[in-house]
Image (cartoon, rainbow, N blue to C red; front, side, top):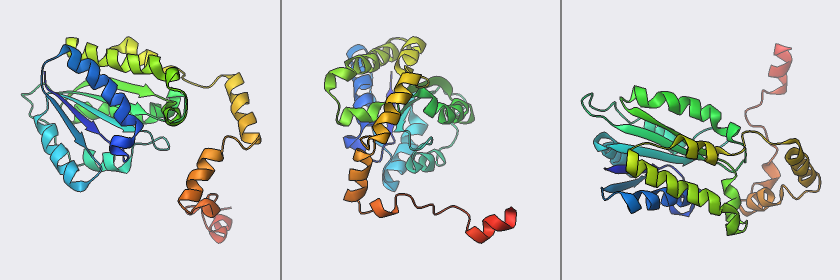
Length: 229
């Protein structure tokens, strides 16, 4: 089986997408002796090469992080370059969406788009793997993510064995659909104590944009708001 993976994280090899896809590939290569082709989408030249590779693919996986309920612009730009595959070919297409927020519900909006995309490209839909809470890998103890890593390895093994993404593993990886009351209370407490914003504030300071963090560049001008009142 030929597996072609398209990685849509702007962080490329430094991101969480790289880690999760790496787990899946490890499981896949343990079972299947077929070819593996990996492409990054972070530059225009790489996107052109990836579009050509998609036209030749047999089983394709597109993986990317969730950015404010949406896919990164580099992924959407690349998708708009794709043409439907030859009707005589049976191309399978699946997706991996990971995000920092813990609730799977955060990714359901982009999942609705991804569910319709394979048919438009003449492909068979394999499913969408959703995993939240992944950004915590950057600072939390590694043992907290052992089960997640193992699930992605199992997902790769099943893909190699059956040519499908296991629905039970997908459900297990989605985990939390919405936050429980106690977790909401915990996060509200962290917010009130100023702990929840430390990482974001540190990042904004590093990039020199902390003073503009509450700006609303797309908000209507005051006179426009008055006209519609």
